Image 1 (cartoon, rainbow, N blue to C red):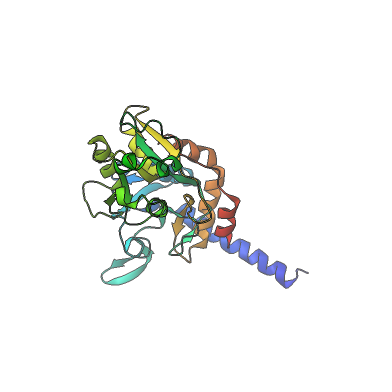
Image 2: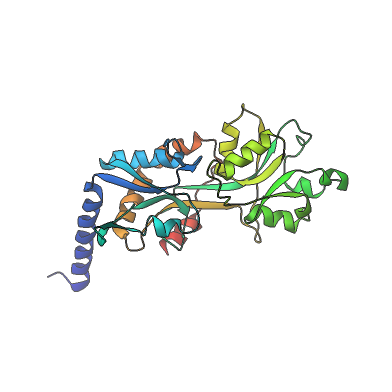
Length: 289
């Protein structure tokens, strides 16, 4: 006779199997995404998150359906957690089911296992008198006159600005907003334009955004120098996918796809010139918690 714990285990397996089938059997892979957020997602569906969504949908025998909304405050509330309404009566369906890129362990959603890890980099336009810089710490030790000629972008938040402040370089930073509200350019697009216009010469920027900028110019137009995490400032982060807090079945389906398609996922992301690091065991453990 099966003991009670064994019976409960069997029931749990059957429960997950039933709900996993429901997730897989649907006709749509419903993604919440920003319509103008290269290199992640665009309405042209040419971002790397678009490509991974296509990969997963194909594997599940589904087609991708998007709910588009700029990634600003309230994005999760108005997409992933927003029920569909029919004649003013809330249904059991939601506008979309998956956010393709959130930090591992993100507390607003349930998160999958990480599927890539990247780092902030110091991105320097070549040929402007800074080609000798091969490590960010060299900026700290420059002669004062040369430091004062720096044109380095900084943001209203993020580890790059913290680093500049801790190293006495905040006064030479050129300020940008992380969420500009610009309907024609996301942050990466604006930085790319300003680098070309020589309004700035360098920036400490999240790896995927830096990768996007390098793909918009001839090869070797920029130096991309990885920033090194310290106990006080963390620069590298693991990224996962987000689902609703109670959507464990969908999380398990996505985790299996992340594991089975790891090589293809990495190949897609590498095509966007994004610096990739090995996914840390700590990031996976934190997600399991």
